[in-house]
Structures are given as C-alpha cells and as structure tokens.
Length: 147
Ligand SMILES: [Zn+2]
Image 1 (spheres, protein in one colour):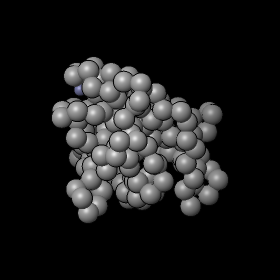
Image 2 (cartoon, rainbow, N blue to C red):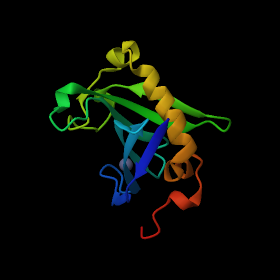
Image 3 (spheres, rainbow, N blue to C red):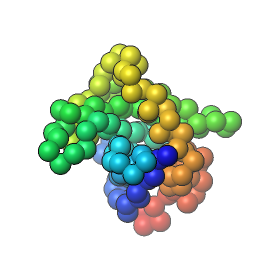
Image 4 (cartoon, rainbow, N blue to C red):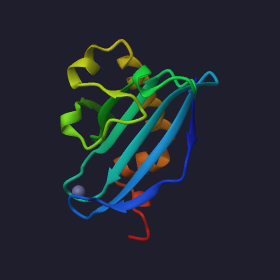
C-alpha cells in the first residue's frame, strides 16, 4: 500500500520557452517504509505536452548514498481514455544526476527488475496526485494563478 506525502509545489518560468511551470516533490512510503521519491515538472504551453517525471527507488536509509538507488525517468500524458507512461533516458530530459539515484538509461530501465514498481507507483500517482492529473487532463486548476 503506497502513501504519498505531498509538499508545496514551486512555480517558475520554463527555461526554454518562458511558459509557467510547476515543480512537485513527493515522498512515498510503502507499508510504512520509505519507498520512493518522485519529482514532476509540469510545464504549460505547446512545447510541453507531457509531464516530466523522475522516480528514485532503492535504499533510503540515512547511511545509504545515491549509488544505492536508481532513478527512472519517464513522461506521463493523457490520451483521452487513459494515462500513458513512457520510459525515456537521461539524454531526453533535463533531470540532473542527484540524490534520487543513478539515472538509468532507457534500455537499463526497460530491463530493470523494479520497472513494475514504477508502473504500480504511476498508477497510484494518477489516482492521488491531483495537481498532476489536473495538468494531464488540461484542467485550469493546474495553471499557477500568479503567472
Ligand atoms: Zn519550455
């Protein structure tokens, strides 16, 4: 059973096109244990039809380091009837190497034994992360009112 801890979103202008962009950071537990951290960049405007996602999985013990974790990079979008998940590689994204874990290439991610965790978690995300689904469904609530 996943549980998502929501934090306040941050807003900025997209570096490539100036469109309003929202960043989310979420902490996920499974059966009470630290399980994952995911981040999302939700940019409006024609250049950005998909949510840019990264999820780190692995050892979240304080003694662990980012090398004890791996990060899957993917995009989320809606095609009217359902949400889609597309695994991509580091060369297709602006996500930097960081605390979430070593960035997996697309080939590594697709062969990885934890890939199913990513799909299970993304199912949970689109059922519970309202800011994200407002963006995916093009509802106005997802646009930052200050921009
Ligand atoms: Zn842009």
